[in-house]
Image (cartoon, rainbow, N blue to C red; front, side, top):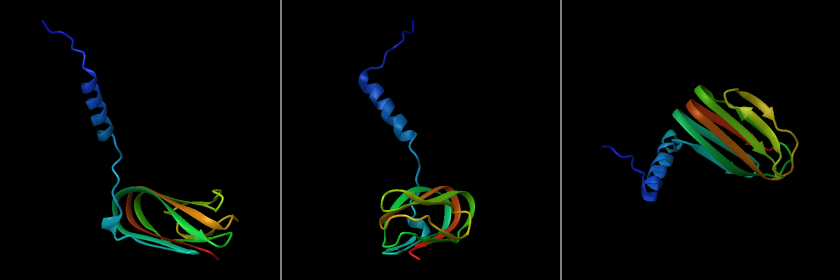
Length: 135
Protein backbone atom coordinates (compact mmCIF):
# COMPACT_ATOMS: atom_id res chain seq x y z
CA UNK A 1 0.00 0.00 0.00
CA UNK A 2 1.39 3.39 -1.08
CA UNK A 3 0.59 6.31 1.15
CA UNK A 4 0.67 9.99 0.21
CA UNK A 5 3.33 11.73 2.24
CA UNK A 6 3.08 15.34 3.19
CA UNK A 7 6.43 17.09 3.15
CA UNK A 8 7.50 18.81 6.33
CA UNK A 9 8.23 22.57 6.45
CA UNK A 10 11.99 22.06 6.04
CA UNK A 11 11.53 20.10 2.80
CA UNK A 12 9.15 22.75 1.40
CA UNK A 13 11.64 25.50 2.27
CA UNK A 14 14.42 23.59 0.53
CA UNK A 15 12.25 23.11 -2.58
CA UNK A 16 11.40 26.81 -2.68
CA UNK A 17 15.07 27.81 -2.38
CA UNK A 18 16.07 25.41 -5.17
CA UNK A 19 13.24 26.71 -7.33
CA UNK A 20 14.24 30.36 -6.82
CA UNK A 21 17.90 29.67 -7.53
CA UNK A 22 17.03 27.62 -10.59
CA UNK A 23 14.80 30.34 -12.01
CA UNK A 24 17.25 33.16 -11.40
CA UNK A 25 18.29 35.32 -14.35
CA UNK A 26 21.70 34.49 -15.79
CA UNK A 27 23.65 37.71 -16.11
CA UNK A 28 26.88 37.58 -18.03
CA UNK A 29 29.21 40.23 -16.61
CA UNK A 30 30.79 42.73 -18.98
CA UNK A 31 34.32 41.94 -17.69
CA UNK A 32 35.27 39.43 -20.42
CA UNK A 33 34.19 41.90 -23.13
CA UNK A 34 36.78 44.63 -22.51
CA UNK A 35 34.40 47.28 -21.20
CA UNK A 36 35.65 50.83 -21.30
CA UNK A 37 33.55 53.19 -19.25
CA UNK A 38 34.74 56.75 -18.81
CA UNK A 39 32.56 58.76 -16.45
CA UNK A 40 33.71 62.38 -16.17
CA UNK A 41 31.74 65.52 -15.43
CA UNK A 42 29.95 66.53 -18.64
CA UNK A 43 31.29 63.52 -20.60
CA UNK A 44 30.30 59.84 -20.35
CA UNK A 45 31.56 57.10 -22.70
CA UNK A 46 30.69 53.41 -22.85
CA UNK A 47 32.22 50.70 -25.00
CA UNK A 48 32.12 46.89 -24.88
CA UNK A 49 33.45 44.65 -27.64
CA UNK A 50 32.76 41.11 -28.83
CA UNK A 51 29.63 40.66 -26.72
CA UNK A 52 28.24 37.14 -26.91
CA UNK A 53 24.77 36.54 -25.49
CA UNK A 54 25.16 39.17 -22.77
CA UNK A 55 22.27 40.35 -20.61
CA UNK A 56 22.94 43.16 -18.15
CA UNK A 57 21.09 46.12 -16.68
CA UNK A 58 23.30 48.87 -15.26
CA UNK A 59 22.69 52.42 -14.05
CA UNK A 60 25.49 54.97 -14.03
CA UNK A 61 25.40 58.27 -12.14
CA UNK A 62 26.77 61.06 -14.33
CA UNK A 63 27.39 64.70 -13.44
CA UNK A 64 26.01 67.08 -16.06
CA UNK A 65 26.42 70.80 -15.40
CA UNK A 66 24.16 71.53 -18.38
CA UNK A 67 20.48 71.11 -19.06
CA UNK A 68 20.76 68.95 -22.19
CA UNK A 69 23.05 66.24 -23.53
CA UNK A 70 24.26 65.12 -26.92
CA UNK A 71 24.12 61.36 -27.42
CA UNK A 72 26.25 59.65 -30.09
CA UNK A 73 25.46 55.98 -30.71
CA UNK A 74 27.74 53.82 -32.82
CA UNK A 75 26.96 50.17 -32.12
CA UNK A 76 27.33 47.04 -34.22
CA UNK A 77 24.76 44.76 -32.62
CA UNK A 78 24.00 41.63 -34.63
CA UNK A 79 21.43 40.12 -32.28
CA UNK A 80 19.58 40.97 -29.09
CA UNK A 81 17.99 44.04 -27.56
CA UNK A 82 19.93 47.07 -26.30
CA UNK A 83 18.47 50.28 -24.93
CA UNK A 84 19.60 53.43 -23.18
CA UNK A 85 17.52 55.71 -20.98
CA UNK A 86 18.67 58.99 -19.41
CA UNK A 87 17.10 60.76 -16.44
CA UNK A 88 17.98 64.33 -15.49
CA UNK A 89 18.89 65.74 -12.06
CA UNK A 90 15.22 65.65 -10.99
CA UNK A 91 14.65 62.10 -12.23
CA UNK A 92 12.68 63.11 -15.33
CA UNK A 93 13.36 61.07 -18.45
CA UNK A 94 15.10 63.25 -21.04
CA UNK A 95 16.17 60.55 -23.50
CA UNK A 96 15.35 56.97 -24.43
CA UNK A 97 16.82 55.15 -27.38
CA UNK A 98 17.43 51.84 -29.07
CA UNK A 99 21.19 51.23 -29.25
CA UNK A 100 20.80 49.30 -32.49
CA UNK A 101 20.02 52.67 -34.10
CA UNK A 102 23.20 54.61 -34.80
CA UNK A 103 23.42 58.38 -35.03
CA UNK A 104 23.60 61.61 -33.07
CA UNK A 105 20.71 62.67 -30.88
CA UNK A 106 19.90 65.44 -28.39
CA UNK A 107 18.12 64.94 -25.09
CA UNK A 108 15.13 66.96 -24.03
CA UNK A 109 15.83 69.90 -21.73
CA UNK A 110 16.29 68.79 -18.15
CA UNK A 111 17.80 69.92 -14.87
CA UNK A 112 21.54 70.04 -14.24
CA UNK A 113 22.99 67.76 -11.56
CA UNK A 114 23.38 64.03 -11.21
CA UNK A 115 21.90 62.39 -14.28
CA UNK A 116 21.26 58.64 -14.47
CA UNK A 117 22.26 56.69 -17.57
CA UNK A 118 20.52 53.32 -17.69
CA UNK A 119 21.84 50.63 -20.05
CA UNK A 120 19.68 47.55 -20.56
CA UNK A 121 20.91 44.77 -22.81
CA UNK A 122 19.38 41.36 -23.39
CA UNK A 123 20.97 38.48 -25.30
CA UNK A 124 23.25 40.91 -27.15
CA UNK A 125 25.89 39.91 -29.67
CA UNK A 126 28.19 42.55 -31.12
CA UNK A 127 29.89 45.77 -30.08
CA UNK A 128 28.39 48.67 -28.15
CA UNK A 129 29.76 52.19 -28.23
CA UNK A 130 27.97 55.36 -27.16
CA UNK A 131 28.82 58.76 -25.72
CA UNK A 132 26.75 61.24 -23.70
CA UNK A 133 28.13 64.77 -23.43
CA UNK A 134 27.11 68.23 -22.38
CA UNK A 135 26.81 70.35 -25.59
